[in-house]
Structure formats: structure tokens, C-alpha cells
Length: 356
Ligand code: NAI
Ligand code: MG
Image (tube, rainbow, N blue to C red; front, side, top):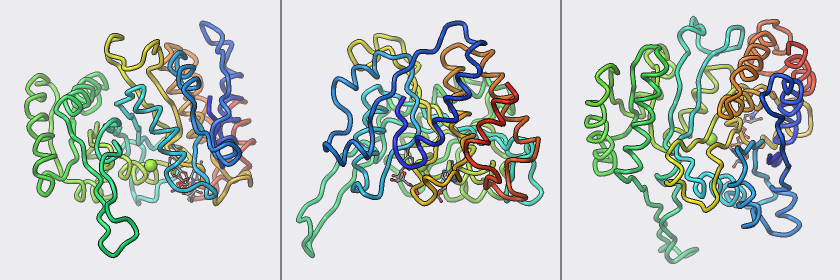
């Protein structure tokens, strides 16, 4: 468990309360250890994540993360050397981000209900501009050149598409997979995605497929979210679109995510690797509200629910989901017509526990 920075420890505390409360429903006790990773340690020691800590992470069944990032640390240091490092070194190439409006949660979209806003984004999590390839030439001069390369490999694209098609089949919702790209401009990179999508689609005759451009997708998330079932997209578009997906489905305080690798064990990149999942709310450390009891812990609690599912603890996961739904329906924890909490963070966690 990495609590991280800002509201990270605040929301993690509530998720831990819920996990403790639900422990009787587990088939085996949940053992965890906390890693002192994040801004405080970096400011003290300039260390982010040591090799020894990476080994410990790789040897565990799952990682649970609050959020990292702090205004006192240069942008990118903690995000790149902690969060992206874990995702990349464990090759957690699938980022699942549900956009499900739970009944009673607030959406700013007029006339849309939980049956309209009910889709899941499958984000490629191991390539794109996040690979960190490129560099700066003549830094700080008027002739400065900055290049950040967009990596798209056939293997990387194929494996995320395969996961998305399989997931779409398994979900049994609309059986419709929408790919979001920018193939009209990024003709090289997203031409590859389009070809791979057509080829892979032939193996899934039961899944309807369509491909749309990211700008149109941004509009349709707002205009007609009911058009989506499973959305598959690259790393950066998935990152950006899912904040939009979050705000239409109850706010960043309700949006959870799983970072996964489902490949056979011999294909895992790290020696001794057992870990195939990192679970986190999609929000960051929210320095603007940290320390004030304003952070909504439900995203963190739902991330813990996704972790329980991954660990094969379906009964406990179901119980947590039901408790979160009841808490929202009870209608007491949110301000009227708003995604903002009406009660302190800890009370929201207590409400969920009261239903377990
Ligand atoms: P953010 O997600 O931290 O905050 C965006 C806005 O949403 C803020 O107004 C914040 O108050 C609000 N918000 C976020 N979570 C909330 C919650 N649980 N309840 C109520 N309101 C909530 O994104 P921002 O401000 O762009 O980034 C802040 C820091 O977090 C940066 O250092 C960034 O790099 C880092 N970050 C880390 C992530 C991670 O650890 N997975 C993901 C995203 C950002
Ligand atoms: Mg993001």
C-alpha cells in the first residue's frame, strides 16, 4: 500500500477502514504493508522508489495506491518515478476505468441517468508518449527543440485490443466496442491501430465495432454517453477522456481504476513477479483540498473493491459495492445537485462501513 501525498492518505485511510470491516467475508486474511513513498520522503532523501521496494511490490499480490504528486516537488518526478515506474516495470498494460453513474450520484448532464452513463474505458497503459522517449536539444535557448515520441507497437496494440474485445464479450451489455483514435491526422500511428482493430475484430463476430476520432468522442461523452459500452483507446487519450468520463459519472471522487496484466506468468517482465494489479482512484493528490476533510473517499473505496475482485474475493467485493451504492442512495453524503461531499471524508467512509 502506498498512501502517497495530499489527499492520498486521507482517502486511503477510509478504504482501509472498509477493507477491515469486510475482512470477515474474505477467504484468507488480507496482509498488507505500507511503503513510505511519496513527496515527504523525496523532500527528505531525494529517493522515490528503491530497487528493494520494487522487488517487494513485484512479489506482492496487488498494489493499492492513494495518489502521488506535490507542488513542492518538480512536476513529473513522483508521477514518473513512482506511478509510471510501477506500471511500466510490472507491464500493467491494461488500465480499466469504469464510467458508471451510480443511482443517486450527480451528473451535470441534463436528462441523463445511470442507464445512459454506463460504459468502461480500456486504456492502453504501457506505450504512447508516456514511454518517455525523446529529448530536449539546445535546452533553454531560442533554438530549443523538444521531442516526445509516440510509441505504438503492433504487439502493444494487439494485446490491448484483444483484452477489450474479450471484455466486451464478457460484459454482455451492448456488445459494442468503440475505438477512439486520431487516425485522420496521426496516420502512421493510428493507421496501425485501425488495421489491428479490423484484423482483431474478425475474431469477435459477436461484438459490434466502430472507430471514432478523439475530438468527436469528447463531444459524444457529453452529448450521447449512451452510445458507449466499452471504449478502447491509447494511453494519453484514455488519460484525458476519463477525467471527462469521471465528471459525468459522479465526479473524480467516485472514479476508480485498475492497472492490470493478464498475460501468462512466463511473459511477466520482472524476476519473481507475482503482482498483476495496481488499484487506485483516478484522481491525483488534489493539493487544493488536501488536509481539509473535503476529499471524497468513494473512488478509493471502489478501487479497493476492484482489488478484491482481482484477488478472487467476489463476495467481499460485492458487499463493498452494495454498501457504496446504499451510501449514495441514502442521499446524505453529497451536497444537493453537486459531486461535492456534504460530510467530512471520514464520515463518508463510516457511512459505507455502516452498511457492511
Ligand atoms: P487532481 O485529480 O488531484 O485534482 C483535480 C481536481 O479534482 C481538483 O480540483 C481536486 O480538488 C478535485 N478532486 C480530485 N480528487 C478529488 C476527490 N477525491 N474528492 C473531491 N475532489 C477531488 O488533479 P491535478 O490537480 O491535476 O493534480 C494534482 C497532483 O496529482 C499533480 O501532482 C498530478 O501530477 C498528480 N496526479 C497523480 C495521479 C496519481 O497518483 N495517480 C493522477 C493524477 C494526477
Ligand atoms: Mg489522469
